[in-house]
Image 1 (cartoon, helix red, strand yellow):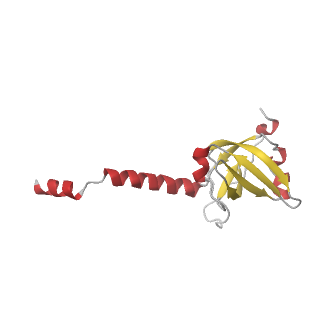
Image 2 (spheres, helix red, strand yellow):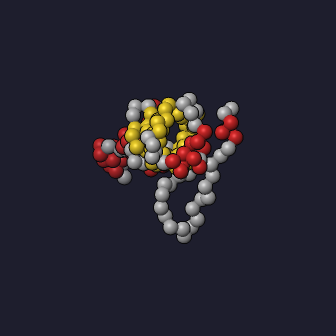
Image 3 (cartoon, helix red, strand yellow):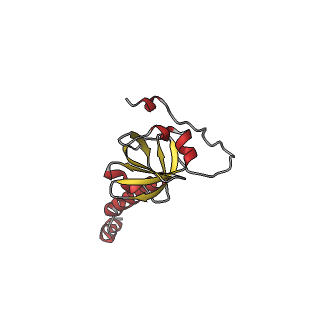
Length: 143
């Protein structure tokens, strides 16, 4: 087990009545990703993380993603990975300071992308299960 996995990143939950801002995350883990590369750009770091292709639809450019409890904005999405731009403060004050190429990370994908996907997939299923007009006529003629 990597040493930093003995640590966790915790932020207090938003309370009712608080001002709403930032990302909406739930604290769930959807999959495990792997740090592929970290590039120091001087005033920021580009962090490239791969994940199972089945989770890519839930990673949205400019959407939110949570890496080991740290909520961030996605910059770019590829076929099986994404890029984050991390500011020096976040790199220093979170678990990101411990990441190297090959580090495994817990990923929570964009909540809204998951919800929309779920709704659309169930609407498509419901439309194939829906009665046809011929079936409706047949049923109504029995009364």
